[in-house]
Image (tube, rainbow, N blue to C red; front, side, top):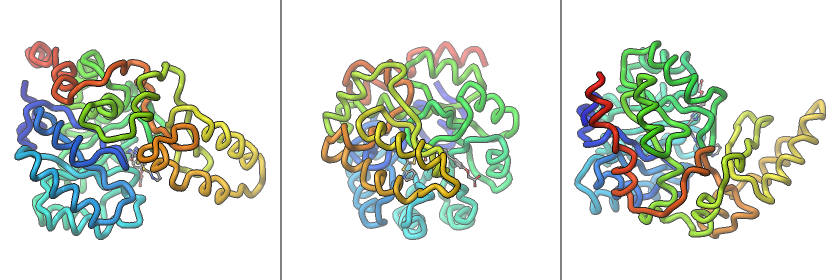
Length: 313
Ligand code: TUI
């Protein structure tokens, strides 16, 4: 059950746990890594010391490799980059931007760097810069998204680069995993399904909203701010989309009005469990996620066909 990415990272299954800001902590990441996948701690918008504490907890909880995701829009990016190098983290994924500026530092410290890309152009630029793999993330994903679907993006990125491609967006069971491999991916990243893992510390109200979600329950907010975010529909998205529509019709939209509504909204849902006024980020595949399980059982289910799949290549 080996793909190139397993050899590069020293993991058993080619399955990454998606880095969900405020959610993917040492508890979730270590559980995924212990079960043979790649657990990833999300730095999100947190200061370096907070993330350092999670890394140290994860080191206590697992002796397997785990990664840290650096969200490049965070005000703390520079200090988080320095800190992950100090802590000897071996895998860094990045999101929401171009990590070019930090490549030399990661290389010097022997960090495997795997950026999320949402286009072929960025994938090619990243390969030239010397990254170890890319995560091609379709707009089915939760949170901050690009414009292409996984089905269209993954094979185009696979053809454009020679490094391994990890597929993300819309994958929550073994059928999705198998499909990703058929598109030429060498691994997958799964977020939404791990949200309802026993080891995921997100508020129970958030888990329940994912478990109850139907296929058409996500919407995209923030198209006019340049940071489109996929979330589950609720009171907040109704208000947000109404203001967005109003502002979009103006010559000079007041984006601060929208920012004010978005600030702190993710924390509200994740920590306080306020799923009406908070931001409940989720992928479109939430409708497929029906039960709470351990990370071990989720990984077993996701990888159920991989032995058979690998005999095809
Ligand atoms: O990053 C994500 N998903 C996220 S981050 C997040 S927290 C957040 N906080 C404040 C504002 C926005 C988000 C919630 N979800 N996924 C990875 C991802 N990266 N998706 C899309 C991209 C992306 C998009 C454009 C990466 C690079 C890019 O272009 C960079 C360039 O310079 O061309």
